Image (cartoon, rainbow, N blue to C red):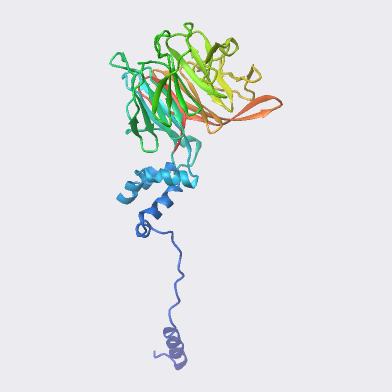
Length: 375
């Protein structure tokens, strides 16, 4: 049946209407559009992102991979104030002798941020002596001094630049050392002991500005064991623990004195936060030492921490207390706990921010060191 005139006119009017414009949806800039920019601008953009995204971003293209691997990106991160405090952990498997290094990283793209904290290996980290090396962190670098190589103590030292995992060698110390105490005071890196206490070079200082070593004379104490096992700096003084006692070295005065009160609670896996010593006590207790008030007190508010102080280590993670627990049970389960600290009523209170397993290894391992570095 033929269409009526009215119907024909209606169809014609619809057909002659211009098509509706599609609404444009703004999309984020693609990697191809970003690649049109100069390297300097791309670096500036990438430097603002958290480091945990770098492994994924480096897979996008060769340009991203090259820029993320460059030292310039960390220069930009520092200038932009985008640096992070990252926990570096050295583990030594009982099946091998060479320590292997890891960083505590947040793995992105997970539903639960706590369960996605993991120890991530650093394949490119320079090798360190299997035993006896002394280490101290300064900004984005780790100084490694002495140690045992092929059953011989060495006098060598080098600095690891953590953002790039590259190293530069230092002039050799005058004395070969193993398990020496170290501390940075007044622009100098002091190395104490780790050798015969009667050695003329028992204390040496490395000037960070002139990059030279000098012997510090006038300090002799045969009561200090030749091997020290822990050291740290508080108020420009270096606190030293050997196998039996604790000592305090004052570089300004050139004095070395025993500290019996510190020795009553201090254990190996300890650290310093805001001028106080945090250390493991009996069972799952943590004790705090105030060197000014000269008192020990228990960290309040914590329950349920693993009773594993032997083989576990503490570190100052940007003002929080980070504990790496070593739960050896045939294999090696590494647990990490981060605790915020607060002073209330003259006491220090701790609150567990998160706690979970960050790595499981097939063979038992020893935590050699853990320390926080700015990257």
